[in-house]
Amino acid sequence: MTHALKTDNSDALIRDKALWMRQQAMKMVYAKQLGHLGGDFSAIDVLATLYFGVLRYDPARPDWAERDRFVMSKGHATGALYTALCAAGYFPQDWLDTYMEHHSKLNGHPNRQYLPGVETNTGPLGHGFPVAVGIAIAGQINGADYRTYVLTGDGEQQEGSNWEAAMTAGHRKLKNLTLIVDRNRLQQGARTEVTNGLDPLDEKYRAFGWDVVEVDGHDYAQLLDTLGAPLGTRDKPLCVIANTVKGKGVSFMEDQAKWHHGVPNAEQFAQAMKELV
Amino acid sequence: MAVAQPTPTPGLDCRKAWAETLEGLAATDERIVVVVNDSVGSSNLGGFQTKFPDRTVNVGIAEQNMVGVAAGLANGGRIPFVSAASCFLSARALEQIKADVAYAGFNVKLVGQSSGIAYGELGATHHSIEDFAWIRALGPITLIAPCDAWETAEAVKWAAAHDGPVYLRLSRMKVPTLDLPGRAFTPGKAELQRAGSDVTIIANGTTVHLAMEAAEALAEESVSARVLNMHTITPLDTNAVIAAARETGAIVTVEEALDRGGLGGAVAECTSATYPVPVQRVGFPGFMPTGSIASLFEEFGLSREGIVSAARIAVRRKGA
Image (cartoon, rainbow over all chains, first blue to last red; front, side, top):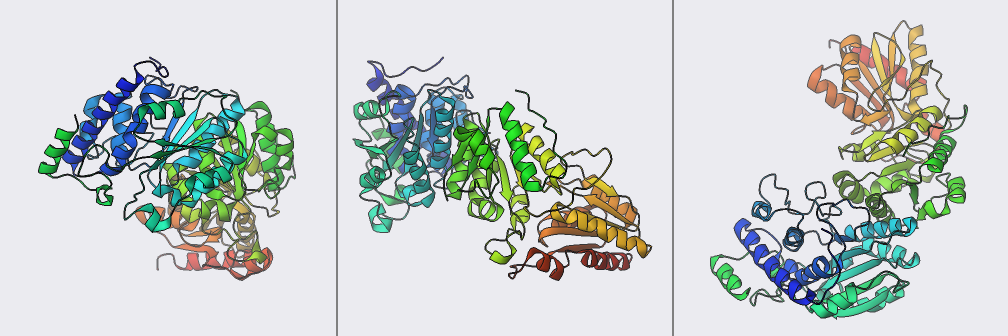
């Protein structure tokens, strides 16, 4: 089936899906003792909103030319991406049990040749955004009506390739492109503003020719309103600064840099699963 | 959609052959687009831009973005030809070539212009002698260095029709078009330019015609030299290399590139694992000084005399 856009029940549906995604990601990372839960959990509400209230896609036809595209530029957040693609119907749930196992399709970073629904291979930061710009340019040349969404981390914005891409998108007025910055304000080692500050990020994007909207990245209503806009409502690319909390949903993980790639022990896992209800 | 097969005009130089062939293909296959880094002029794509302005994507001086955008265009159903100076394309965007093109497997054509030491006087920053080694390390990319205008046109046509990543390493040097009856370009299959039994000279790109001159000189010394045009480095025609080793017992490789990791490296890897024979590699040793193409070719042995000398050594080493 082809997923439709926002409905009256979208908010409840997204809430359910996001909870399920957090539970599954927690189980996968606990089982494998590998992963990036902090960034998974800051982005999961955005992904749940996209896949259950915004994107036009058909999991039975991952190559459908007119599908909306979502590019996960922060490729390390596979706990978020894989659970979203699974929930969206791209592959069966038992595949999640193979997360990062020997020869698994669920690689530590996504590979489009392993998994349906992955638009491009990411992992090294600063790659997904230029690819998304290329997808949007193809849509512009083709006169296609698909929309392109790309999510980057906020620390990821330190990679210069993003600014090359931002310049091109602004120059070409790619109104079919939406960038979402997962603004949890933490990168692997420390706070972004301590490491190599990004603020004022909104002014930077405006200066590059973009519309900019700031939202609470865990508020489904705000995300739906902002991300769900149909083509033709703007004449510029849109940057959505999604203010998020790293590790959102598990008390001891929230806003802690060490949970960038921290993994839970048995006690922490039990505690987390108790909170994820 | 059928891909046009325009006939190359005889006597064209390689840059003209590239541009005119691509324009001909683009006229019948609307999927073809070019992606450039302010390199319309240096890629000889002014005609393409005039004919297909909407299909000329100029991202400015931003090579990482250029290759990423190309991968995205392929995702969107286009056949992008990324055309930029090979020194910047291969080096500045190497991680994008690795992750977004080779590893992701997108149908992107990378066209390295003015490769080797085409920009001789501009110095080592603008030389592109490492590109063979770097791109060869990224397995799934078909790596082709055409030897003349005819082969350039054939390689462009093949790349457009092939579904998968390709790196075409082109030159701006004027080289003679080699005259062989019934010539056919088959990627991954070496072209036998001259039969011989004492030594095999394996060359590609701008050095094939020099290898032919060297073979003629060697004949005057009663050394029978086979000449193979190894236009495709990846995948290597291992059958031709092994046959050369077995039948002639000595090999000389010649390339306008670093003398390791490229054609010579590929041939040496192949022979050492199958049929070890002496392999003399003619190429450049490292960062090159400033100079004209002619003076640098001469100094570093990319010449009739340099290849003859390498062949004598290879023959002498047989059985040693």
